[in-house]
Image (cartoon, rainbow, N blue to C red):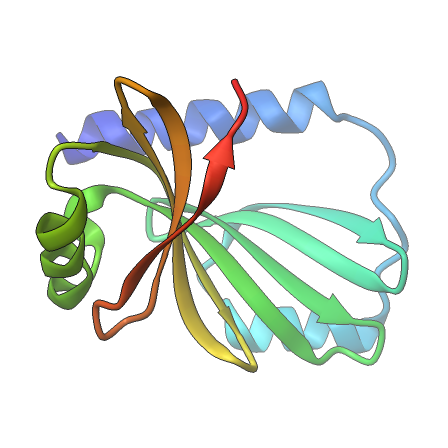
Length: 147
């Protein structure tokens, strides 16, 4: 299973890289140094610039990850795509208590100065809606998602 997931992650990254092929933005030495310090094992790194921020998209331990940096090299936050069984147990219990009938997809772990949050999409027969969870298992509905 791990080999399949690794292959899928690699295929997605390669596909994204070729789909958005172009010149990477000029990433300053402070940003590069900070990135290498925080993520020394990162593979397949792709840089983008969004206004005053740099975004590195890469694979770390078989997971697609994004890291946002200021122009001064400060790590502002990260986003990782997760599978359901990779959520903290408290979050899984919170989902099972309130949303056991829904299918949970598109799970993202978001970490920044405010802490860690888990954003998810849930599907039931009425449609899609967003969920947000804290690491201690507090799960709230965030709104309907249009198809």
